Image (tube, rainbow, N blue to C red; front, side, top):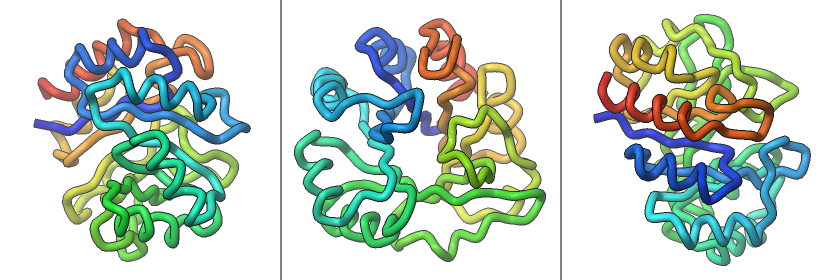
Length: 202
């Protein structure tokens, strides 16, 4: 059964909706420029109240600071972006945390997973130089042909298209954020439930 992560959550209600519908993981954005940003305090509160695996999305975080954040939040893992992300990912893995390592996908070119640190799971997402994710845009799924498992597919996923992705390409996992929103940063609990159900039952 497909592993499912719901990212960019910011309320207890949406975290509960993800968990109760069967999501395996929830994600919290710690990037100030994002419409989905939450404070460290709120992320910690939501993680503490959650029974699902928890990942935090970071940008340009140093190794020591990043590992300390993960320990402070008692998070399951990290989805790192920006400068030094490989060093942070490797340090997080060494410290016992899980890593979803973002790899942008452009056109129909198969994604290059060679840059992914050993032990991390690649997260293939739509390539956008001005965004970290949450663009609401899909990439050419044909690029996934031959992609090494396990990997997580992201980018513009919603209840309307995730079933087709899973049935056609059988990714190990899927991740969604903007496709579950009423407006940027505001998730809809009914859409969350529909997405998880569609991904799990595909």
